Length: 340
Image 1 (cartoon, helix red, strand yellow):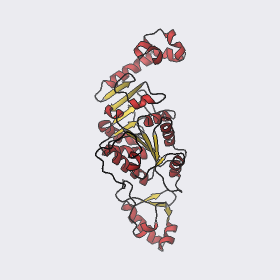
Image 2 (cartoon, rainbow, N blue to C red):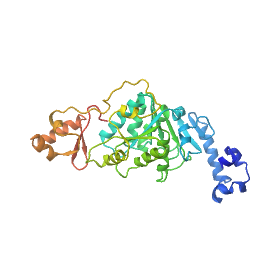
Image 3 (cartoon, helix red, strand yellow):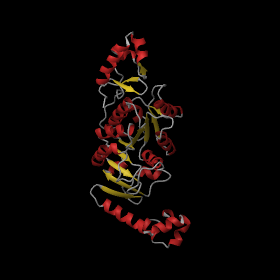
């Protein structure tokens, strides 16, 4: 309709019969329905509130990068700093059931890249997404949260405080109508916007069936750079990242690995370093843990200690934020200072 008639006002001014070839009878009937009229009034009332904006394809504020994707949304609901939607950005996504180390890595990289001038885009999910948003907010570039619901709904509810902080210092954005509940079909659509708003997409911890791989595929199809952080060959949460690397994604160990691949982007206020993901010093029981998950029996054998000694030391290290307990009686070393 837009290609044929121009702006939405021009399309809607046409006789409904003229619009028939471009849509279905049900959609044509909905255009003049009471439910749609009420929804429009609701949207106008929402947009009249401070910090609330409805951005259409005809607006200067519409993100230029989204115009490059095959199916840009006709409008966006935004709450917060809409100028962030048009700035150089990196998408960071990953597992909802992330390890503590994965969240620490995502937050540290997001903070460093945000301070380099990149806005961090993610999907407000638990785990890696939330960590990426926290890191983005901690840096100068801030963060964009793309929602799979109406912008007036926070999902998951556990991220309500984070969403409020993003609305204040970053921006929340959604293509879904007000009141739209979380539905399975919404999130792949949301994922194409996460990648579409960014110059590249970094995946941190993802299983082979992770929705993060949908975002990575969308990024590749949109001509964006795709990055992945490798992990243990024994970890299910590393297999998705390894599959991406095998198919051509750039392996990431530091912020420089990302910045070097983003054509046209020049870091600002950024001191080059390769220590975003530092290795924990090897000392005591940590010297025998390595970086893969390990059980108590294996540690007893490696360290020559009794089960009681190992368990006591693991408890101390866990309380100190140096070790995380994983399902199945496994333990994994964390980087010092990265406990949440």
